[in-house]
Length: 406
Image (tube, rainbow, N blue to C red; front, side, top):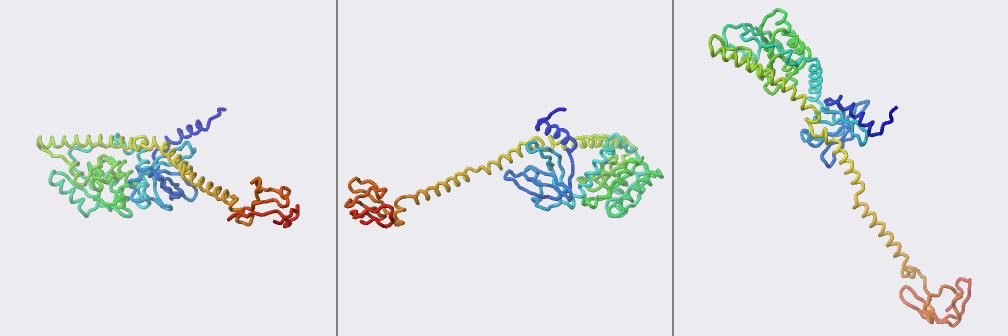
């Protein structure tokens, strides 16, 4: 059996752990929050049964709408890392959403990863659009600007086609079921050469019907090519990724679905649109690859490499703060002051103030330490705290307190 060093075992665990958790979403409550002087945020994410350490580095923390606090419910997007000096696994957070919209974003992220693994976004499954469709199916609300925009473009640019509208709710309860059923009905009865599904812009809640798996499944299984035109140009939904073509707006979807005819100009315009579709598909493919690369820790954030060094620096900073020289110097001065006061209290001058005297022999000018050193008629000097007294010894009595007289 091989014997590992601690570093070897830690590195082996790190090598197994990190590659399998490079992009994860975690929901939890913030606790043990600490903002370092470096600007990095350290805290734990916990729920009723567990907790995990987390770090949000300064560069990513700058994008937060507000500073997190104890008890915040959040959704964190990041990757798992093992901090070797403490042997502790943690999540390095790239994005932090406060719950509310964050819960929908979490659901969107999870469904997107699920369908991407199934291959529903792969370009190889994208069906080409017909050059000159005669029957154009539309799945949207019968009221509002979307259907009018599509009809205005179609009637202005193209004649001799048939438009079939299958009216549905585009938001709210039951909308996703109606949209999916409409797509299935077009396929079941072969009612159209191409389909446009969509609605106008709105919040993520308004567009949520187009993020439901039931709608994605109907789009993927459709034999009829589908153009998704949901929201504005900056809005993206699951339907956009599964559809054969994604149009930035409903009007643009109508432009894509038709081509001019009966003349060379019309033919050239049609060829241009086909080229545009091919290029759009390539851009979509490269966009997905770029997005995948951006999610890689080494490319999406410098903290993938720097995080152990930054955390180690923070550890050293905390240790240096505990060894602050000014604190040690202050402690030394305080000890020196106490010693000085003690020595001052032991000064003979201070002892004399308490009623003691020091006897000197006048002849030898030396301190008298014992009654045995005294003789009758001997001249002595008594040192008091505020002066000297000259005296003559009258009598010496040993081992008798108070029996010596001057």
